[in-house]
Length: 370
Image (cartoon, rainbow, N blue to C red; front, top):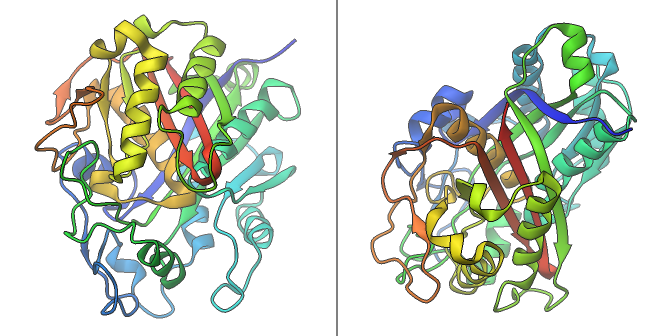
């Protein structure tokens, strides 16, 4: 017998600061967090902008493990009293660059788990922009299959010289310093600090503790369109498959989906493919489903983006408020979506958070009101 999976707590960090209040005030007002990068030299780069948290710029400053620990502490406190030694952990973080990172990704996970006093299993995901969503999916599967009754799952990322240089060399950064998803004038992505940890817990565990869930993790899916090492499938085949399978696992059709937090990187090919994939998956219901791209305010937190955006999606559901896509002025008309261009009130019984990555990877999770 499989267990239903609930979200019982979360912790979050972004360029707006630590905690859900700072995140809500920034993202849901449509206020971009981008500023001039001072953490390292960007004078030779296509842009000098990123969504960086000022408190992480000092020496020695915050480290990735510090972000993950802080988010984990928030999640545990929000979920309510329990022995942390009974918690598994699944963490998404970046691959090590030997010249800049002293620890392997798995070593970061071990350090985070030890600082929080967590148990096992301890798992690490590093598959770029889908990593945190995959970590959440894997954590949900651990709970669903009875391996553990509760797990902390999420990711952490701080903008660093290596990631910035990689995106700059690929000419993927927005030269105009604006991340404008689905806009005809979009020029590319901007990076951002981010992290989030979600407490995923079985219904039986919640009842035993007398705790109430924040939401139910109703469905999930992971796909790979295997089309190209970097380019997405032009018609968003992998996106469509991920959305369709996540909805199917949730037991709902597109007609019951209220909101999608899209991957929405602001790059011409990715946005177009994602919009096409959403049209395929949602069909005639596409025009009824609200869509926003919140990287337009937080920046792209790479390996942590799926966890950060899952929390934003959860906040939208619980506040009945939809976050806007900032700086959206001229929506792309090739695959029109129901964009949220200003904060909007709406009931959200079911919402989907979607992420994609290089190599054709796609991952989707469906949250249901608890």
